[in-house]
Structures are given as structure tokens and as C-alpha cells.
Image 1 (cartoon, rainbow, N blue to C red):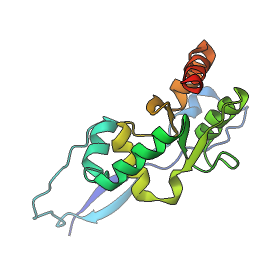
Image 2: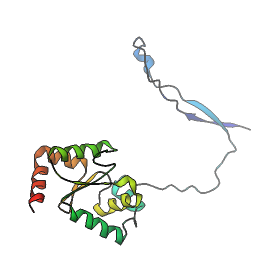
Image 3: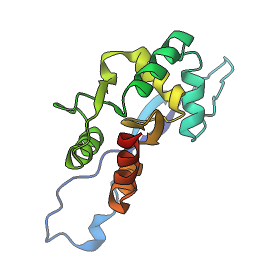
Image 4: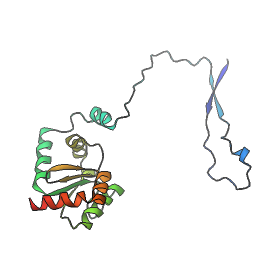
Length: 172
């Protein structure tokens, strides 16, 4: 019986001594695993192409996550408070660096805000992605409207736009 060699790449070493010549820094040679040549795949192989778009992935995986009852609840939450942050963790104990960043920004502006821990309820987490058409957390809502995630909040804070939006919401 003949054998077919398939390459398996080994991981490069993490520490390289400083005295090693530059020519010896080439990637390691692949090792081989041997399989019998008689090994064939007789069943049809189906490849599923995944889109690189986060929204397309989100739409396909959470098509029915936003139930009418959940939408009604989310509408009530975002409209009953001037500033709401859907985040990983709580404002007193953020469990994600991005959530912590937004909490620190809001606290530095002395903004009273409600926080909702999306880690406590998977249905809420998935439904909220569809509700806002935004695939990541945290999600900041100001005066009943989706404002943005961490990056948008940071940029708005730096430009002064966030403070203007919050002041406007507090006065309305």
C-alpha cells in the first residue's frame, strides 16, 4: 500500500537567541503525516462560503431573536431613561475593556445612566443586535436613540459631540 504525505506546519519558536544568524531565521520545514493512498472521499463535499460582513453573519444567525415582546421591552427601556448603556457587566463591574471605556467616559461627564448587563440573557444579547442593527457591545442609547458603540463614543467624546448630545437629552 502506498502512502501520501501531507504537510503539517509546526509553530515557530517564540524566543530567538540574539546570536543566531539572519539566514537561519527562515520558517521551519513542514513535518509530514502519512495517510494510505487508498484513502478517498466518496461523499460529495459541500463548501459553505461565509460572508466577511458582520451584519450578514448576524442576520443569518439571529434572524428571529428579536421577538415582538422583546422589541416592546427594549423600546420601553431606551425611552424611559435618558442614557442607557447595554454592556458586558455592570457599570460598577464592567467585564469587557470596551464596556469599561464607555463607562469611564460617561462617569467623567457626570452623566446619570442606566446599565444593562447583556451577559445575563442570551436572548436579550442576540435580540439587541437586531434591534440596533449593530453587532457588537457596548451599545449606547441617548434620548431613546442608538448612539453607537465604543469607537463612536470615544470619537464623539474627544470632539465634544457626546457632551452636547447628553446635555441636550438631559434638558429635554
